[in-house]
Image 1 (spheres, protein in one colour):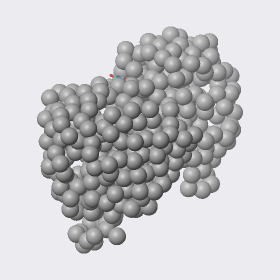
Image 2 (image 1 turned 180 degrees about the vertical axis):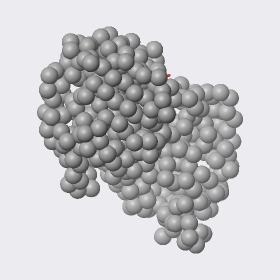
Image 3 (image 1 turned 90 degrees about the vertical axis):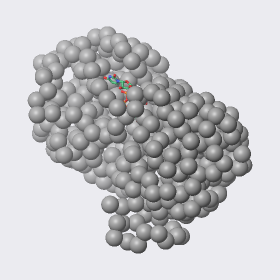
Length: 428
Ligand code: UD1
């Protein structure tokens, strides 16, 4: 079991380049199933979830060629099966996007219940409701497999009972070849929804309204290969912005779309950080004093739930009492016990976390409970007094490209070690 060893109290300075968006690429790779031609995808982040999505495409029979670290070409014309293997599906949540894509292209799909981070129950009823509305038959779960089939798919109106990124993506994928018009109401508006729509449209799809809460998909007869570049990762950028603030640093976060970061920028400014926006970069500088504030997570353009653990670390060190209201997931505070080990004072009651700021965090052995919780532990460790060991880093590496190298480039004292290496050494 590998771990990170971090010697804290190092001020981060310099420039960091943001990779392609994880949540966009994990939708766009399954979407290549729909193309009658080669899709060349650029600015792909080099993360474990991408490896898994490519392995799934490979297992279906698609021809996958890695051109370089950030570019891949996929030819889905060679696909021979519509069943995703269990061992791959359980590695990531987004494996369920293969249901919409395979159903849309072949009229059938069998995909195991997906894995991914645990934030409480993660139902997929809205996805299935969408498939059914388009005329698919969703079969009762057998051996942990979700199976759907349709002789033909016909456009329909689908109202989502709650704003769901996953259901919006899956219904878009299933609808691109459906006859007539599909209208998704109360759709998710996240940047990765817009990126997926742009990708599908670049293949010849007819999707309008992505980025608003009504998306219209007019079915087409054929989609072609395309070349497409993934948008920058909003949450990776937000994580480095938070890391800069936590360490009282001065960091320029490069290759970002500042508009996607507005809610994060607003909260960091409220806490006292100085933020300068440029065309494709953001400079974040902070002193040693942070003000408390309240945060409610919401679907985009609200404050992203995927930044909730990272902001909790900052509030743990801010003067006064702050309240976080988790508005998306029922159980996204599993990292709180870990943060308490480092001296944070946090009380959780249902969806609320009440945080009483303390002057300093101190090092402790902690675990990454999930992807973003793990990122939060890294931020806490970089700010804390002493040497922190973080276990279960495989969660973090599902979603952050070259985290150790990027942080070392900013002056952090972080090292990745295997279990058999000596534990407590200074990282640099
Ligand atoms: C995606 C992101 C995840 C992020 C989340 C919310 C990806 C790969 N993952 O997850 O990082 O935290 O959006 O921004 O993009 N729900 C239902 N029924 C459904 C679907 C969802 O009740 O059929 C509920 C969920 O339990 C949750 C809320 O709706 O409370 C939002 O979930 P959703 O937007 O679907 O999250 P994911 O797409 O799984």
